[in-house]
Image (cartoon, rainbow, N blue to C red; front, side, top):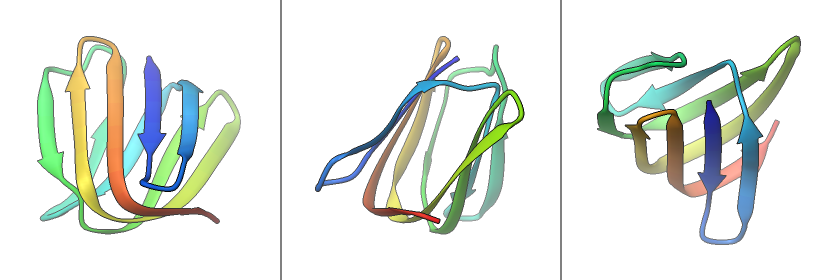
Length: 82
């Protein structure tokens, strides 16, 4: 699936992924390929984008996550790698 992570400062990640785990406003959410259409507000915490054996970790705060087809979009107020 295609994953895009954007903050006001820059595009943080844009690429393929096998899974995404995100800090939704009311708990953690996991996204896999073929997920149903979905939208949620983000809270604060760790966003993990996994591609094969590689994990890309970001600390995010606020924003939203949207799943449409095989596209996952994360628009966040703040994102830093770590």
